[in-house]
Image 1: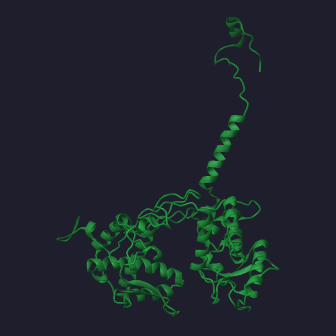
Image 2 (image 1 turned 45 degrees about the horizontal axis):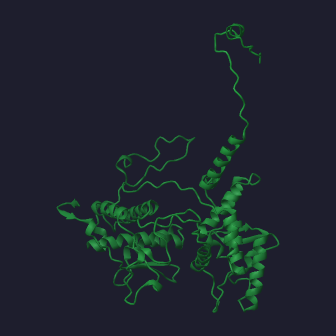
Image 3 (image 1 turned 45 degrees about the vertical axis):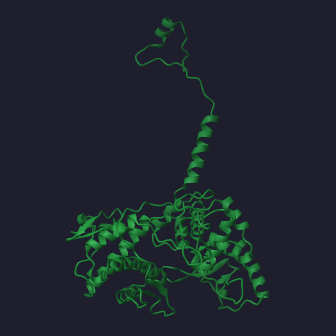
Amino acid sequence: MITEGSSPRNLADLVVPDVGRLIETDDPWEPYQLLDATGTAVEPVAAYFAELQAARNVASTIRSYGMDLLRWYRFLWALGISWDRATQGEARDFSRWMQIADKPVRVHWRYRDQEGAAPSAQNSPRKPTPGTPNPVTGKPSPGRKYSASTRAHCETVLRNFYEFHRESGTGPVLNPFPLDRSRRSGRANAHHNPMAGFRNERQGRYRPRVPKRIPRRIPDEMFNALFASLNHHRDRALLAFWVSTGARSEELLTSKLRDADPGRQLIGVIRKGSGDYQQLPASPDAFVWLRLYQEAAWRLGAPRGRNQPLWWTLRRPWRPLNYHAARAMFNRANDALGSNWTLHDLRHTASYRMARDPELSLTDVQWVLGHASLTTTQIYLTPDKGEVIENVIAYHARQTEKPQKPVEPRPGPGYRPEVLDTLLGVRQHAR
C-alpha cells in the first residue's frame, strides 16, 4: 500500500486486463501499430514509432519497443489514467508491479477447454514448471516473473518515449521515469579518463540491475544429437549454416537463391542492425545439405529463380520460410531430445567455436558476427560453466596422479647441520 497524494493505491488488488494489442501491418511507413481496446491506433505511440524509424531502427526494434509500451498502456488503462497525466507515482507503481506481478500466461488453443478457459495454464503439458532447469541442457525455463533484463529494457523505452514527447511539447513537462538522483546533475563522463572506457552515468532511477550473462553454447555431442533428430534436408542445411556462419536466425532467412555461392563458400544475408548486405563464409557441409534440399524441393515444384527466396515451407502452397516457422521446426527437434536450446544458441555456438580457435583472430570473428565493438566479441572468450567444471575436475585428477615425494627434514634457520648431526645422531645429507 502506497499513497500518491491523498489517494491510497493497493497494487495487490490491481488487475491489469489483457486489452489492446500490437499488430504488424503491410505498410513499410508504419510497420507496427498499437491499438487500444476499441481497435483504434494510439497516436502518441504512432508518432514515437515514426521517430524510431527516422533514427534508422529496424522493424524488429519497433516491435520490441511496442511490446513495452503496450504493457505500460495496459497498466494505465487499469488505473484509468491517461498517458499524458501519468506522474512519477505511476512510474514507481509500474516498476513495483513488474517486480512482483506474474507474467500473463498464454496457453495453446489445444489445451483450452470448450469455454476458452485455461485453469491449469502454468502447468500445461507442453511446458515444464516455470523457472526449473532443463535436465538435458541445464538452462532454466522462463519464470513466472518478469526478468531483470525485461524490466530494464521497459524502463529505458518508457523514459525515451516520454522524453521524446517532452521535447516535442506533446507530453508532460516532467518525465515520469526520471534519472537517478545521484546522476541527474552534471555532464555525463565529465572527468573521463581517456585511457579507460566510457561508463553509463545516465541510469534511470527505477532501472534494475541486470546481471551479466555468459553466452551459452551447445556442446558438440548435443549438437550432433540435435542434428541427427532432424527429418528434412532443409532443416539440416539451416542448422549447418547457422552454426558455421554465426548469422542470426532471421538474417539467414533473408537470403535469396542468388546469395548462395558454393564455389567461394559464401552466402549473403541482410544484417539485422544496419540493414547492410554482407557475404559470410560457411562450411562445405552446409552447401552439400543445401543442394540436397534444393534438388528435393525443385522436384516437388518449388519456385526457382535468382530473385526467389532461398528457404521455403515444406507444404504447399509454397511460402517463404519465416522466423516463427523456423523456430517451430527447431522446437520439434528439442522436444525429441527433451532439451530447450534456442535458435540464438546456435549463433553463440558458432561464435564460441571461432573465438576459441587460436588460428582465427578476434577481429575476424568480430567482422563475421557483425559486432560494432570488439568488447562484445570478447565475451565469447569466457568459458561456460560446463567447461570450467570439466577443467577443474581434470585438475583434481592430475593432482591425485602426481607421485607424493617424501618430505626430508631441513634444519631451521640459525642451526648448523653438523651440530644437529651430533645432537640427533642423524647424518644430514648435503643437498
